[in-house]
Image 1: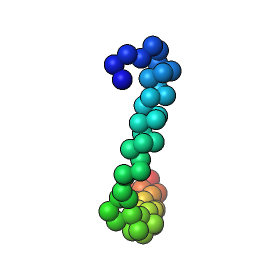
Image 2 (image 1 turned 60 degrees about the horizontal axis):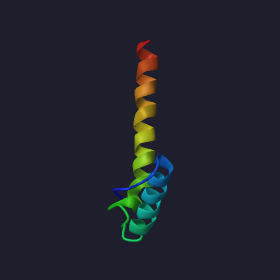
Image 3 (image 1 turned 180 degrees about the vertical axis):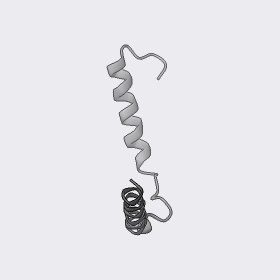
Image 4 (image 1 turned 30 degrees about the vertical axis):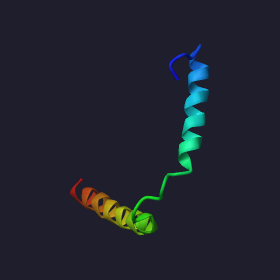
Length: 56
């Protein structure tokens, strides 16, 4: 990838490389727990918002 003519060629080469490498990527450890994490963060943020409303 040393001799690209323009930025568009560079982008095409990078996209091709990402698609090639993507086959070897693995899922994140703990991906199954993400929905539970989102729910807990939502609950925590709602509590914080309620506390701020009481203070204001």
